[in-house]
Image (tube, rainbow over all chains, first blue to last red; front, side, top):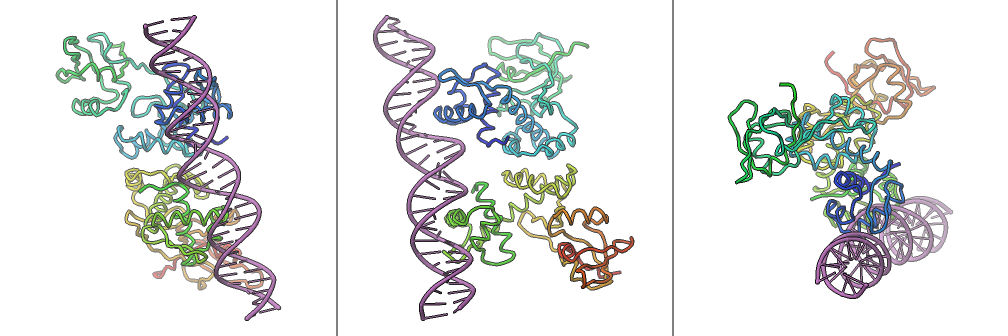
Length: 222
Length: 222
DNA sequence: AATAAATTTTAGATTTGTCTAAATTTTATT
DNA sequence: AATAAAATTTAGACAAATCTAAAATTTATT
């Protein structure tokens, strides 16, 4: 079965919005897709006709098994292309989204299989998000907000929650990347910031705002 | 300026058909694009509106400077992707056309620039067709039909005119690739075939039909 | 040169995905 | 529980790209 780009984009959006609430509201989809609620209603009905979603008038929409499978295939393509753009074509990880958004709709099983092989079957994309494997399985890795972490424990940056200019600027300035090790030294409640140490450099202060979008895993050993 | 996939496909087809006749007929375009003549008329009018082609009712269509520039950009993308698919992702050169047909419509200047750099600025695609450079310039190389070549002169395969199963089978069987050196030994007019020697293997007989679609350059020295 | 054949265009319809505005249903508030 | 507000759907319209069938034009043939 072949799907249009519009259909694929709807399915992908439903998938992402379902991470927050099992039933996705028409308005939420409309906002995510930068379109009107009325258009969403139309398309959702079509997707129901194609047996990709469950939908009830005025209630909301959610993917069924077929829709979820399709979503994971699209996300797999998106993230593999992002990995390719960053690791092979030397894009910055903040420049790849739009291009991957186009590449993800290219339809060729062999293309994705060979791209995956060429890249060495990567399990995480340049933002730290897991790349679904051929069967749609996602590798797990802790993604805890840096902000909430206990002081003095060693942590490793596993993902970035967004790509705001402020976050970018901070990461570049302090040489923080995915894989970088950090510790939270203390929290300043009066101005909403925390002090952390990066690798073994001198301490750095970052806003709670930013610390919320940096995701880490806890390193037990050591 | 951004163009739809349909528009890009029309422009590309006009470019290719113009290699044969300066003015392209509606029916030719319709056949090349697998669509109806009436649809071609509609689209050609739209392309004229966008200042990409010259067009006169009942006469035919041809690219203007802007249209030619666009065509070369699209062909550049198509052939770079074909090169990538064959040389990086290990596709066979007979498997790449459809996928490149999709990839060529991805729009990102940086993507193509970086892909070109990664591939080492190749000047010919896997079929031996020239890859336009950033300015649209095409490298030249002789592409003479093997069939018409003088006997006993050393020749080098520079391109394949099509990818018919028969041609593929023959090339694979006799280990002939782009770059392979051959000589025409003699012509058999009674059954429409020629005898050639490939590299230094024993002579091989191929049909005139196939010999017409194999393109060569003449190697002077030697 | 008249007529037939082929080509091309026009007119009107269709599908996809979108929109606005009005009507409906659900949720929140008094 | 009635009413106001918010969310959602329906109805009708539109643009893009296509189609079929009929009309117009060009080319070929007698």
